[in-house]
Length: 465
Image 1 (spheres, rainbow, N blue to C red):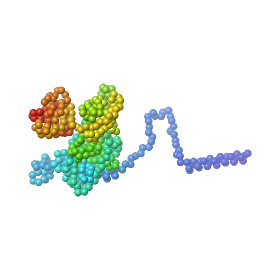
Image 2 (tube, rainbow, N blue to C red):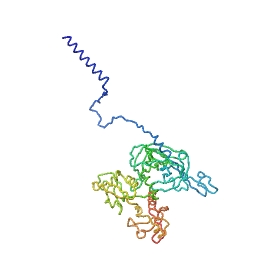
Image 3 (tube, rainbow, N blue to C red):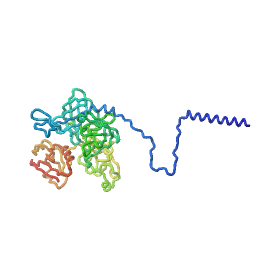
Image 4 (tube, helix red, strand yellow):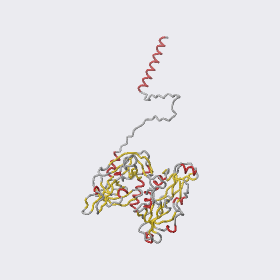
């Protein structure tokens, strides 16, 4: 009996040793320890997953783009003396050359087309472009759009130039890595890194503003204006244009024109000579707490239609006053700059799908964009249109836009309608685009003075306070 018990004990011991050895050497399942649950455990959600750092490499994107960003110098040639000794450079016996401004530009084709900011080349007598290899060329202005602050210039180089291909700015995501590439004076190309901080940013912060910028925290300073904002693939997704700070230098907020808008403007200039602006045909209204209460809205985001332009694509498609536009194609519309940012990348004749709310119910309508032929100026109570050369000649006006109609009953429509507005605040206007630019950039507290030619061809002035 004792031998049987001893044999049984040895068998059990051998089995335990064998099983333990197998678990030690062959079982790769890690040992798990479950946290002990207590009555004092937190009700706040906690994520215990590991945090992994990023290992993004910017070197390839920088190498692809740095040689395609140039320095742009705006030079004024004068016959009399410069304004100060700091502007003087010898230029013959009776004049000189003054630096009006400088910035950066982006080569977008191998034959020398360059995108820059309008404010960089505005008023230039000569434009000099310096490449990253120190070669310098004279540049020609092909066209510009002051409202978007985009200009197209061209150099005739003796070789094919490196260029940056356009990317799709509609695909940008918040937090996405970007590089700001510039070519400030005497520094050659510089590269700074940051992220997309915001999209469809409107610096004017008022309804119906055409602005829609990309915001980034990549360092951009004045000499980098007109430079490239690129993604990590080296694709152009914006043209750097503005800095928001009291000093005019970078403090964390910088802005760029989205590449889709810049590309459309450049293509329009190359094909038509000016910007072909397509419009939806509405005047929008921001949705705020007051509007939500007034109309008992179920949403706090979107664009409320305040007015529909007769004869526009919006009117033809059945869009009505107080409809709330929530989406255009696949672009979410949370504020007016979302709408203008997308529509400004389209042309007259393009069709878009508009998703809207009417009385709490969703609807979808197809809208054909129409050309901007008239411009309402609510603060003046006037609607203006581009004037033909025959109309200018009939009113003895050298330039201007035609007063199409009055928007309120307080103005003498019989005297005004048909007249030609030649100047606004002493600035000459020749198109409704120029009128729009002046009205957008004016100081709102100042009076507005218009110079116009009435139906008898008499030059007159009116002041709005």
